[in-house]
Image 1 (cartoon, helix red, strand yellow):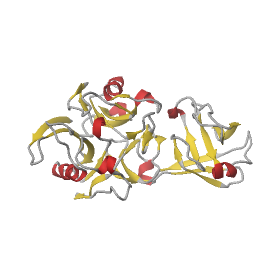
Image 2 (cartoon, helix red, strand yellow):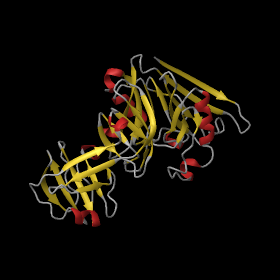
Image 3 (cartoon, one colour):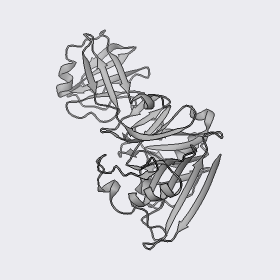
Image 4 (tube, one colour):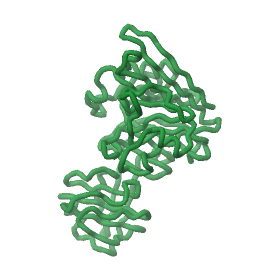
Amino acid sequence: GLTYTSWVRGRTEGPVGIYILELNPMAGFALKPALSNDMIPGIEPLTQISNRYNATAAVNGSYFASNGEIIGLLKIDGEIVSTSRRPRTAAGILNDGRLVIDQVDYQGTAMLPENTPVAISGVNYQRPDNELILYNRHYGQTTRTGNSGAEYTIIADTVVSIQNGNSAIPTNGVVLSAHGTAAKKLAHVNVGDRIHINQTLGKQWDETVHALGAGPMLVKDGSIYLTTKIEEFGADVAGGRAPRTAIGVKPDGKILLVVVDGRQSRSVGFSLLELAILMQELGAVQAMNLDGGGSSEIIVNQKVMNKPSDGRERQVGSGLLVVPHKLAI
């Protein structure tokens, strides 16, 4: 159910090293995203993430900040771990192991005691001005916010404490952190009040067990379909040839995980268009780009198979693991 292939392809621009995993989700293996350190704070090498789960194979996952915050959607075991600040492409894993790839938009609402809805801007990233952010146990022990806001700790839909910042995050609840105009909407809420939280990614995506966002999309319905401008990616992602990581699905449901080496004489890398053409050539009818550059890495049986462009493993915020199906759900 799992096939690994490596190519060296000669091109006018120079050679390109390509590493391909093909996974049959009907044959006992499935995909599961995992956080570095099993929580958002901090980063670690992909080999450590893979070893902790005894994964058969792995590739790097979402974009991430230096402190480990995930830049994009991440859903693990049915729980939203992180959200994108704008609609972007994600890969979703259903209960039977099947893969879906499409653009996803998070919608969150906090229903206040008088049945007034207040929009939740996102999950588990540094609170911007005038927004309402939800923090759950995946963010670590505290919200790590300043004292310029108002934070409501909620357990079983009930506000159990209120403070200005850096609130402890309960393992069995959440913290709603508000600032500016968002804080004014919650100013009348008191300890003991009930707040019901609703979160959705859309019908199909609410049915996924796991989801991992990055982008842009590369292939849609069998055709090259680059969403670089639509999803507002800059030159750091879209510019020139670079090491790349991609995921795609074939018409028969088989899943492709592909890494391309770059920024070295033995492998010059791919542009996003070249990566899209490769995924289409490999048979993908839907495909998307994952984090790349020095993060691009593929592991098989606890061994790094490619040559990361930093000359060593880069510490990353998340990985996408191939594990026995029973461990993925």
